[in-house]
Structures are given as C-alpha cells and as structure tokens.
Amino acid sequence: MADTIEATGLAIHPGMLSPAEQRSLLAQIQMVMKRSPLYRPTMPRTGKPFSVMMTNCGTLGWVADKAGYRYQPRHPETGKPWPPIPDQLTALWTRLGAPATPEACLVNIYDEGARLGMHQDSDEATFDAPVVSVSLGDTAVFRMGGTTRRGPTRSVRLSSGDVVVFGGPSRLMYHGIDRVLSGSSRLIEGGGRINLTLRRVTPWTDAAAS
Ligand code: MD3
Ligand code: FE
Image (cartoon, rainbow, N blue to C red; front, side, top):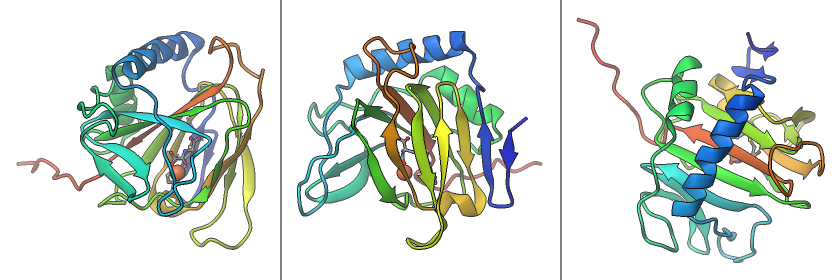
C-alpha cells in the first residue's frame, strides 16, 4: 500500500523494491548502459549542458539537444535503437495498474552536484497514463509544486527502492531535483543516483471487453 495517495493522483511507495530487487534492477540498467551509452543532453537554443547524464530503453527515448526536446527511436550518438525495457520494470508498471505497456524508460544519472531544475513533463502525446519513477542509489531531495510554475512547493526525499506514481492531475505538476545526498546509499559502487522514469508517449487502445 502506498504511504501517500492524494486526490492529486500522486502515490509514493517508500521502499517498494527490496534490496535484492534493487540489485537485480541495477544490473539490468548497467547492461542497458553498455548497449546504449550515457550521453550529456543540452538545453534547446542555448546548448547549455545538463549536469545529469542520460540514456533510455524502450521503443522511444527522450532526448534533449540544441534543436529541442523530443522522443525518438534511436540513440542520438550511436544511431542504434534503444534496448528493450527490462521485464522487471514492465512488470512493475503493470503491478501499479498503469495501462498497456510503457514505451519509454528514461535513465537519469546523478553524480555528486548534479541537479535538475523545476520543469513539467509535457513532450508526450498523451497525459492519460501516469509516469512511474524508480530511485536507485543515493537519496535525492525532490521538489514538487503545482501545475503552474509559481505557487508553493514541497520537498520530499526519494531513497533507493522508492517508487512514485504520478497520475491524474499530478502528471502535469512542476518538479525537479534540488540535490543528491552523496554517501547516503551503498547500492551503486562509487556512489551516485539513478532515476528511471517509465512513460507512455503515445495513446493506447484498450482491448474491447467482448
Ligand atoms: C512528476 N526526473 O526525468 S523523478 C524527469 O529524479 C524527472 O530524475 C527526476 O523529472 C529524477 O523528467 C524526478 C520524479 C518525476 C518524474 C517524472 C514526472 C516526477 C514527475 C513526470 C510528471 C510529474
Ligand atoms: Fe520530469
């Protein structure tokens, strides 16, 4: 059962993944990163580099470069298709009641000092499915606001094994990562944090029930 379920459609599941599940998921993601190397995205127009490194798995991956933000089926540097989403993550998506199957899994890598400014996720062609976030490694200070850029925000710590479902109105809330607490987890050799976000990018069709 989720620790926090709100009218906003947000559900926080602290420690949903056991240490063994975290280790097996980390091994799967390390294989993804071998096939699909991390790259450093840049801000549209300015070309300013992100402090977060990224890659993806799934049929579509989110990329950022001088031309803009978009989803595409291939890695921007290798030109190869993204590897498939590990079964453990697809099973988690289904277990959480999310629809159809996830199309994109964005892998965000935070080293000491990396952060992610407040933003809204709005590059998808549907907002009807939730975004599912899985945290591995060092604890992050996550900031969330409302559905407009201004207004009150609150801060929540996301630790290794925590799973958050952003559905309903919370799907369009502003959010960011203020900082990562280095040395807070021993999961990842050498430290750091990995965040996985599972998403639908395009609408799906429910199979008709007779
Ligand atoms: C709320 N990632 O990839 S996870 C992102 O920890 C992103 O790497 C952060 O924001 C990270 O876009 C935050 C929590 C999260 C992810 C996606 C969301 C919250 C969200 C999408 C919609 C609403
Ligand atoms: Fe986001």
